Image 1 (cartoon, rainbow, N blue to C red):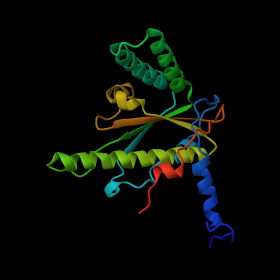
Image 2: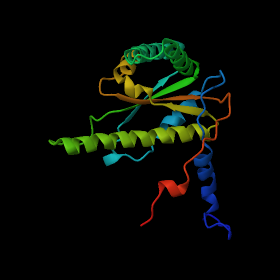
Image 3: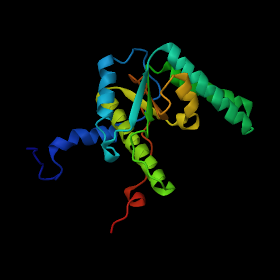
Image 4: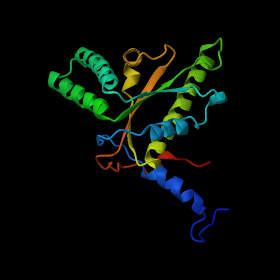
Length: 213
C-alpha cells in the first residue's frame, strides 16, 4: 500500500508518474547514437496500452531508422510543403528556410516513429453524424497512444518531438514509406538521446482552462 505524507494527501507511489508528466518537454536536437531496438519496442508497447474506443486499438506505427527511408520521407514531405507554400505566395527565402529546418529534423533524428490510424475495424453507420463521431473516436484513441509513446521516451531517458505535418500530406507520407492504404498518418515522433535541454514553455493558468459545477 502506498504511504502518504500527512502534509500531502497524494500517495507517494504516484509522485514518480506525476513527475514524468510534468517534466516532459519537447526535444528537437539529438545526439547521433541510435535508439536501441529494445527501447524502440518499449515505446510501441507503451503506446499500445492506451485506452481506445470499443477497444479497437486503431493505432498503427512505422519505425523509420535507416538514412534512406528518412531521406525519402523528408524529401517527399518537403516537396509537398514547397508546393503549398509557393501556392500561398510565400517568400522564397522563407520557404527554403522552412524546408531546410524540416528536412534536418527528420533526417538527423535517430528514430522517426510515424503514428498512423486505421478505421477499418471501427463501427460503421449509415448517417454522417455518427460516421464523423466514429472517426473522431479513432483520432482520439490514436492521439492517446501518441502521448503514451512520448511519456515512454521520457521514462527511458530519450527525448522526443511530435510533428503534426503528416496531416497536411498523408498520401505523401504513405507513398514515401510504402504504408498500407488504410493507414492514415497522424504525426511523426522524432526520438533520440537529447542534445539539448527542452524549453519550459509558459502554461495557461488553471483558472483559465477549468470551470467547476
